[in-house]
Length: 151
Image 1: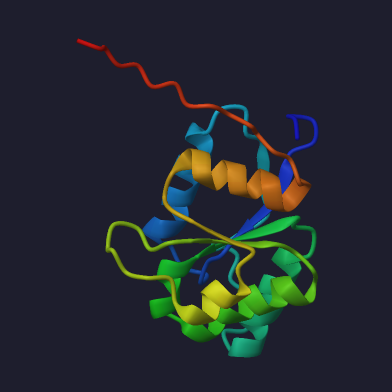
Image 2: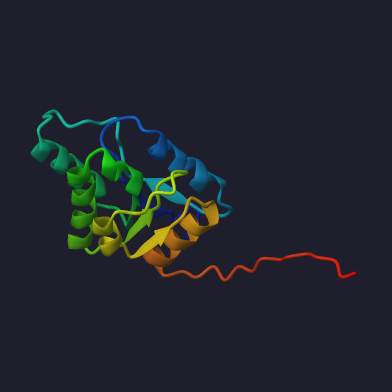
């Protein structure tokens, strides 16, 4: 992964503005040396508002994605459409990284956990590392340094 070859990423959405969706990009942007291209377009609602038109719009957006980042908090708002995104990704052999609900302590729904290749918390490092691992099979092998004093 580099600036010239960013990871093609689809982030789940419901064709409506949502804090969870925008928060995902705040976290990804704060990750160091992480390059991605966002293929999701929640503002481009398909001409038809029926379920099948929405699903077709999602299929088109997901077509070139290497990975689907699924925001599990959206499951409560529209479980059918969120589960569709996960199922379609798996049918196309795309890895699915599920992000736990933000700040609520709620669990990831079982339906999504079973479809996930990996489940992560809201942490830019965990998110970017999981995306690298699942999309490109890259390991970061980073080490944390903890400083402490002995008395």
